[in-house]
Length: 329
Image: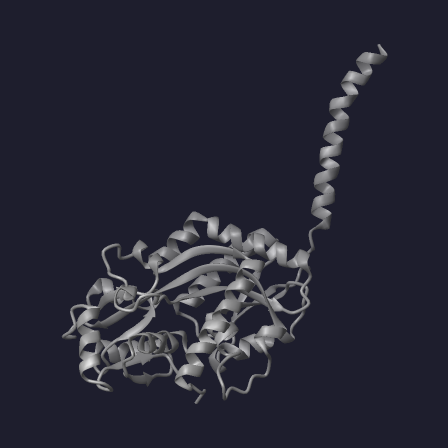
């Protein structure tokens, strides 16, 4: 009889131990309070980055069990939002939807007066996506290939112009890198934002732009812009037959990334919770398809991997900036 009771009790004890382990693991996860979580984004609503931030916020709200609100704090090339994030709480309720520019380029660009230093006052939490780049021209452009554009630039130094969203942008430094690799001189035409740059490119007022596909993919598909080459192999997911810029400039590669950053001092356990939310967004079929539809590639990276990417970005952009003697305007 005693053996029978013991045999019946063992499975029940096992279930109890499993339940206790689950309860303990849940208790060890940091609890978010009932106040809304703020996800700061440094640029205006409506762009591809803003859309990605809102997709992540929706998934994170479910994973974290608390509403995540995207707050657009525009200005100073994303640094107003970065400052607000760096000065905010470290308990996970205050994060920055960050990108290549306001986490890596700003630390290397002379002439900037930074209220916070992203390299020391903000940390990586995780990457959501990679924004692949391409070289585009207007539909009336005489250039039918990147080889033709480069040949004209070589024959006529200082004649070919390129549009960017501003001095020190990824678009600017990517094109400067191409110029350095090819040993040619081209004219930089900076604008206040991507939309203004694209409008003049479409109108034929500038010759080309190396920019993220998220901002131009609809124009390429409609025919108002023509894609000559890709700056990143991931762009083949959208245009499998497009050539690579590296065909004329060996070793050339350019892209941007979007992810989450937070204030220095954020506990590891909180970072892990946010990593889970980012991974859940990347794995969500609806989110992934919306990103792909808008020219962005879902690509999860944890805090350690994103930290390494940022260190590499800073080193590479520093070399381009110094070689061209670029300063913030």
